[in-house]
Image 1 (cartoon, rainbow, N blue to C red):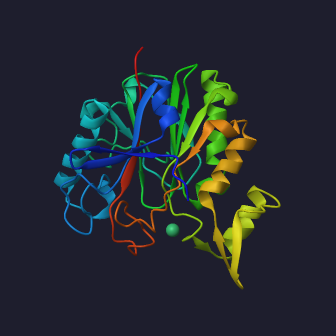
Image 2: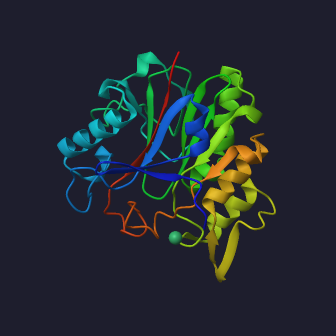
Length: 275
Ligand SMILES: [Zn+2]
């Protein structure tokens, strides 16, 4: 599979970026890998989530490194308490620091965040689910959405782009989207109940699922999100796919499926620049 994201090395810390977003000049962004942190196995090394059983001091140290990489203070970070829903919220300066130092004050029930405030760092956490980065370089609005299979079939990508349009005046045709590393169609086997939800989300879903055996299909979750975003009015040429499977690439990524639940979390970060 070809890779739309580039690998960047900053000393020990390795992260990925989508060139069209970087080249827009409107925001800094990245998706982390497992490399460049201080956590011990099985969270080695750059685990960025407090909720997985890692030492909280290690997670805080790792988050500080990630914030330093984007060039913002730790107190500018915002994190949601992700629940595999499809709620989208706008965040501003009043939310700065929420969920940064512990999970207890993270924004409740939030899987997608949108901001128009430069210097605020949106963050979202992953170990196989699909990370969506959205950026409107015209209106200068940025968003992150966390899309597991539930969020994906609840069309969280479309909800995020609609929120950018309704609340911030963005035109979907201006929005750049980057779909980051997640479990790929090579490794994501689902059952009948999941497939029926997929069919309901995208009737006639051809090309997104491969039959394996009775009751089992392999689902292309990043492809499903791409299809939903196209239906929301995002232009095909404005969508960048990472091409990385988190389950195949244990050398780079944490994977809930591949590591049977005992693992760390990567993060997506985005911050509007200028203003
Ligand atoms: Zn794979």
